[in-house]
Amino acid sequence: MTHLRQIMIEELQRRNFAESTIRSYVHGVEHFSKYFGRRPDRLGPQHIREYQAMLFTKLKFSPNTVIQRLGALRFFYIKVLRKNWSVAETPYPRKVIRLPQILSPEEVGRLIDAADSPFHRAMLMTLYATGARRAEAAHLKAADIDSQRMVVHIHGGKGNRDRDVMLSPKLLDALRDYWRGLRRRHTEWLFPGNAWHTSSRPVTTKVFWTACQSAAERAGLDKRRIYPHLLRHCFATHLLEAGADLRTIQILLGHRDLEETTIYLHLSSKHLSAAVSPLDALTLAHHSGKGGRTH
Image (cartoon, rainbow, N blue to C red; front, side, top):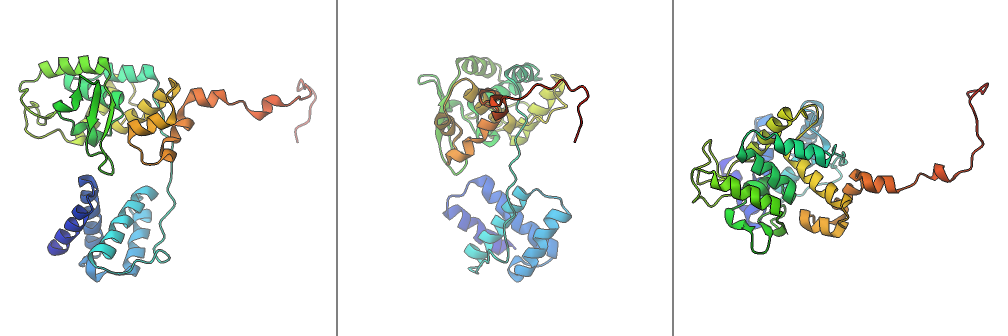
């Protein structure tokens, strides 16, 4: 599907889709085509229905992943093939929102202290101190660390939206120490790639996963599910517990809708404990439990 692939990429680029979204959408259509062994422009609604069911039953994909695959196919059929797309024939599954298991500030400290190199330590500190997504952190440049204004400039976030976040003095000191230890410091990237960190390209997002996994094991947190995005959740939750308002956290995270940010109300122990159960307002007769009957 070389020709169709090129057209799809151009249509996505014309709409200024993020590179990660372009890769995901193209991969989704290619997987759809390979599953049936036919060109995607020769597949129709019945194939899409069969493919959607297979993603759930055979590949055991989550509803959110299936939604993303359907989004790719919908874009391909409407924008590339110029065909109609019936929502009635291809309903989107309901999104599943699962609450992550937040680390306490003490556990985050243990994780950072357990990093197996200054490079990994700086990466983990950056994730937690800025709330950046791993792709955003991977593409930070040294020039994005603005010590004059004490902000970090994050470019090309989700939806291609730039934003500034606070620069922690503690993070600034750690980054300066880390930077002085690099073999080659004339790279533009804050976290340059390859094993010697001398590449002219930034690290891949996989390196952030590796940093989290190795630190979690060394910190004795390997029974927990530790991943880069969890530090973003910790950043927001701990900010909320420290008194920051939801609107500020929304801006720092780069959320388009405040509703996305309200999830942290469910994760903040301070806000949950501040609510009193209505049971506590009831006046109940005291029962010792002796001789009582269970119904």
